[in-house]
Image 1 (tube, helix red, strand yellow):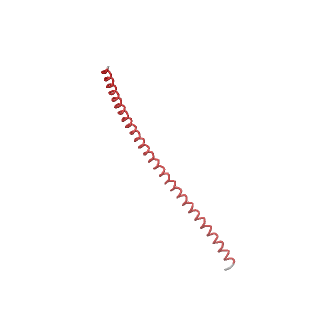
Image 2 (cartoon, one colour):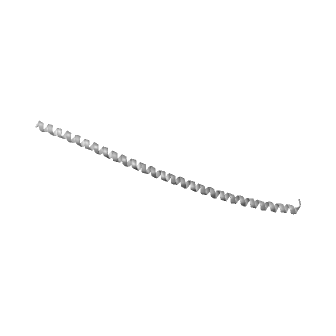
Image 3 (cartoon, one colour):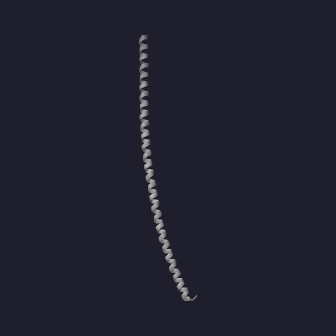
Length: 102
């Protein structure tokens, strides 16, 4: 090989390598962009789904809590009424017995 052929080959190889590197760089940038977009879309969907699920779960918990409070309130009211009635009956009996004794 002559010096001129080596120089031509070297120039061609350098030019070809630059073209290949440029092409690969462009492909890599496009792939990174696609992956970034896909990741963003996937994360957005996941966050939206989780937010919706959490909102539903909070609503269900709130409903259950309200129902339980109402039930406890009703039970407590019935127990107070029963205790009041029992106390009234006991006191009436005691007063009656004391009145009989005097």
